[in-house]
Amino acid sequence: MSSSLYHERFVAPVSTALECPPKAQREALVRTQDLRVEVGERPVLRGVTFSVMRGETVAVIGGSGCGKSTLLRALIGAQAPSGGKVELLHQNLFNLDDEQLDAVRKRFGVVFQSGALFTSMTVGGNVALPLREHTNLDEELISIIVKMKLDMVGLRDCDDLRPSELNDGMRKRVGVARALALDPEVIFYDEPSAGLDPVTTGVTDQLIVDLSKELGVTSVVVTHKLESAFRIANRLVMLYEGKVRAEGTPDELRNSEDPLVRQFIEGNAEGPITFGSRSEYQADLLAK
Amino acid sequence: MVFGRRVRRGALRPVLAFVGTRFLGFFHYTGEIAYLFHDAVWWAMVAPYRGKAKLNYSDTLQQMKLVSVRSFGIVGTVIFFVGMILAFQMGYVLKTLGVTEYTADITGVAMVRELGPLIVSMILTGYMGAAITTEIGSMVVSEEVLALRCMAMDPIRFLVVPRVLAAMAMLPLVCLLAIYVGIFGGFVVSYFLLGIEAEKYLHRTVEAISFKDVASGLVKAEAFAILVALISCHEGFSVRGGVEGVGQATTRCVVRCVISIIICDLIFTALFFFL
Image 1 (tube, rainbow over the protein chains, first blue to last red):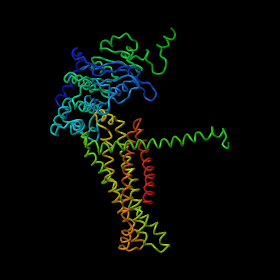
Image 2 (cartoon, helix red, strand yellow; image 1 turned 135 degrees about the vertical axis):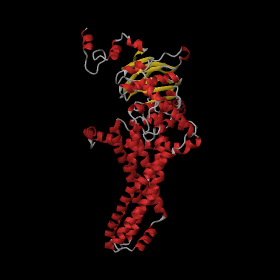
Image 3 (cartoon, helix red, strand yellow; image 1 turned 90 degrees about the horizontal axis):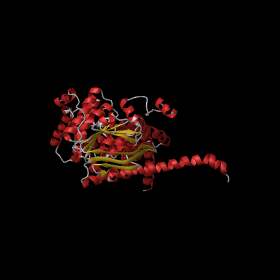
Image 4 (cartoon, rainbow over the protein chains, first blue to last red; image 1 turned 30 degrees about the vertical axis):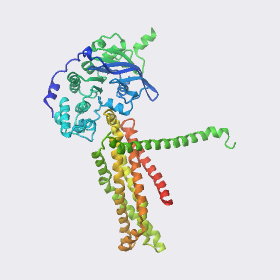
């Protein structure tokens, strides 16, 4: 079941974050401008502006309910904004008709938190699905590509298994293989390490780093796991209350003077971020 | 003046609001189902010829198996007993009039025109409709439907078209077989308990059932098939709020399918009555 590649990833220590791509490649593939999204009547994103350059791996971090998942849904065209702009692969997503949107969708991949694998199909069937739908390749070639994609995620011999026979980490890696099926330019990861044990988290992080390095694919990773974010990203965007609070390299965020960023990174209970009740920090501020 | 200001403000307004909301809700829902039907027809009949998409044959065949082979055991059992009950009830009334042999006519016509399509579609609402809503609802919850969209695959083509086609192809066939089983149920009671001769029973049944009866039964079955498939898919797509939402949607699906089938049945029955 496990290929040598899988063991390599499993045993080898996770390499550090990626180098920034050379300047020549610095062309924004994902860009939001004053993006505002309301869910029902509740504003979730209140003017998010950031961009992701070609070849970059950007991690979007932030506490629960800060709008990370909503941002991801807006970036992939699944959540219409109430204002602002989303540009993906140089196209304003919400100005496109269905055919144009489908053309853009074929150029990016999404790895969902739960894997979102089709349980009625085998692992191979899941990875082959986009190829069967969008290409005219014959079955023999499709099965070779499926093997290749599964090999990339360390699951070469799992193509006949059902998703229900896999553990969480394997399901996520099959999700990655499926997202890679059409050789996308951008991959979006929704909480890739949520619910995984530390070793599997490490394996998944290494996979994201390897794919970015080897394929030069641009990645946007939405995560609340800081260890993972610092390990895989060459730039981080921190959301707080629906806005970009901080943006920079892992080192820049680690050395940030912003008390809110510091509290989030250090995981302190006391600080400007509160969960309902007034903290001592706020009481001090009010007293002053 | 009779109602006065107090009555209008206190009692009538909420009642009118309730009735109005329900009334508008009914039209809104009908519109949603009509849109879904339009899209399903487009993906099934127009898109393949424009080279936009292939039909998902394997899933359609799988759904056809679910509608026919797997459901026929329960459908056959129920309709057999319904045929027997009908023969008993008719026999009880007709015996007093001295025309027991008319049991064959009534059982045959009732089965073909009404009970066959109605009972088969009711059973398939519970069997196929609930399964479709649960399946699609679970796919919504586990983001599989979103994954389809992100892979530039339309969920209507991928999920709705195979189910609607399977229901349209198989429900009339199941209905036809069920009609035979129901008539056989009536025959068992008539022959063994009411003393009607076998040859006479079969002769009267064949004489009583006209082409129009069979056509009306099959048209109803086809309409019910489309309704059950569309409503179940729609309820599946409308799931919100996780696993709890799936359960609520399944209940809603069964209730709405039953109500829609009854309304549709009334319309078709009236139509065929005047035709």
